[in-house]
Length: 116
Image 1 (cartoon, rainbow, N blue to C red):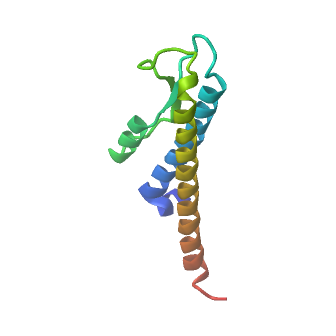
Image 2 (spheres, rainbow, N blue to C red):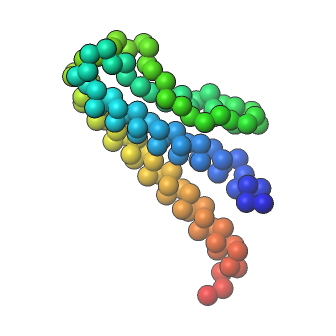
């Protein structure tokens, strides 16, 4: 029943939250391995799952993938880029959490019929 109330938007937000959490893990791994020889940076496969959800298909879970278009490490020059990606992902995650909180507040107000 909850899924019927939530709708497509909530499903997309849940999927985006999963992807953001996984992206945080990928960025942390990339930062930790900046000086590791042969390390291939990680990214998150998310857009294909989002597109499947838009088409009404059951989406898969976001997953970590190697960025084969980037040369393997050591990559100390990427430290600033990874830190920017980490900050961007943190802000994105916080915005998604705030959106879910707003949606839950609206549902709570409807359920309580604004009686206090």
